[in-house]
Image (cartoon, rainbow, N blue to C red):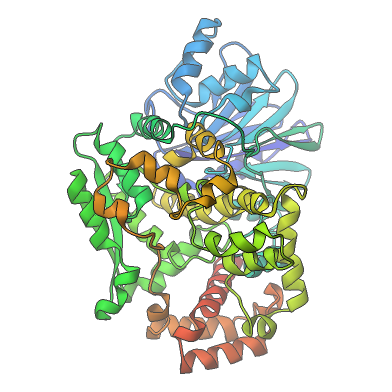
Length: 582
């Protein structure tokens, strides 16, 4: 529901802090266009918020102060169990001043400063100043729906919702060659890193404490399979209800696939006329684009479930400009040909309200991607190639272009290091499942959704990632999820009869975009050639210029054959161009 920022200075005077925090907020004002506010809450401490006013728009001003102790805070996102927390806080004698989500977090921290984060259910990033212990406390939701970055610069500790804003405070932060290497080898930048030197992402499910000039980070939650309530339908019904309860005009970003249609189906059962939105492509390619344009399925689902449905249509003329706008709002580049599609559908939905629900997260929770079927037999046998097979499946740069464009040994070292982020003493398939939840989900899927909806002042809520649905999914072992003929069988069983039969029975279809066709457009072709050969970014990004020249020569001959490496390099170089110039 906003962008947050702040600063703690080791110098008591902290001159210029308000100016710095104001700059951070102004650079993130797209996240919260309704209200910008900041406050010096203590000597050398400034907290601020640029707010998208959804819950208690008149009363829940930020920064918020506890009525009982010298604790102040700012919070981005939604705390779904805030009503329960408010009730308990009142019963324990706390005096609450408004109806916003942030205030109960302060009182929860007062009562349990070490264990309070575990009791939150929602999508959130928060910052609390504890005036008793003289420390700053940052926290992020369990799976990383909402972002939070930090930087130490010139004796000051800064934090913000978006990394590019932090990069422009004080000494400008340069682009990280390690971050670029991770994008090239993985599609995304790993948890804890960023695309800017000296700027770090707070890991999902973590709390950071900055005290006496030092940082400590602890993980308060990690996905671990355990026996829990397996009632996926009940969990999802409660989740959709929680996500929609404070929405101004509930709507759903609808692809026509199982996940988003399940959310719409459950929302429609409790909302008279929900809205739904889909995206498609206005290209003169006839039937060849049907596999990349799901509007027909989305319209089918919307008609069956009674939603007021609208379509965003991307046309040839706006692709180049839309792609640049997309890169402007991404804190890190991600290899996603549908990023521009997300930007376009969010632009449409923002005209009708401030919040939407999405179906993101279901494939990671229930192992729904097709590549699991191919990898599972090799991983079960723990064959030597199981890690490489998985990394090839999720990557975008294959041979012969890998050896032509980058150092193959460095490429393989960077991507193999992904497995160092999960326990090594568990079966291979369990390692892959943890990588999906702790790396690909937050840094690939959720980054795209958060940045490109908030670019339009639109909050995307993710019912599948509420605590109850996540816990229900973790009650199934990895082998159970992979044993069924169809992927996501527990979800299919749960929503049978809640979604149209034709959607329930339809095979999984990847959300995609006609990137090969776009790369044939003169404007995008010219932009690609200019950036890859004329910008000079290749040395900074660790890419061989000779390989880029060969790649573009091949594109002139057969665009379809090289569309993935061309799109990946265009994404990286355009992101660098946008953020280097700022």
